[in-house]
Image (cartoon, rainbow, N blue to C red; front, side):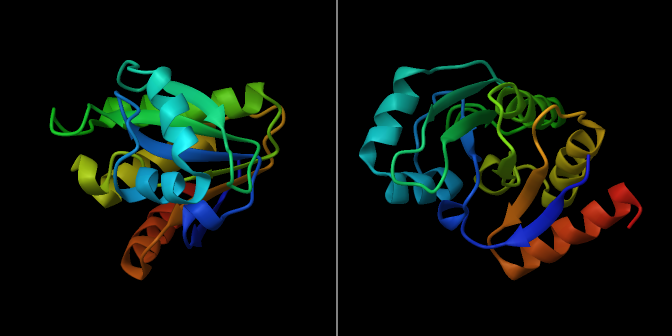
Length: 169
């Protein structure tokens, strides 16, 4: 499927579904999770942790609370904080499961960060390639607008370059 790469704060995005870069405990600490928690309010963390822990690569869904979305998909691309790093397989599974659960719920739009990169320790260029490959290969029923989001300029440039390579743009 087609997708775009955007730069910005995921907590300020408008979409049916936002994807949280989670650890298996689903505890919303720093990075993407922290940004979403600060905007959504403490209840999102309470609901997320009540649904955890989940297996590596799996997802859980919560209400979006004060975010401009219908729901949040918490994608466990990395083990619980401090218990290891993300892997190619965990990023691939978390991405595919995020797309599938959003599509199954009838979402038209989804915003996904660079799962497993950053605090999870996986190389951004390689992680972006895995995520972009999974999105490109996905055959949606309802999803039409999928955005890969980057917070910083250098992250955006890396992901955009990788996305262009994956899609042949």
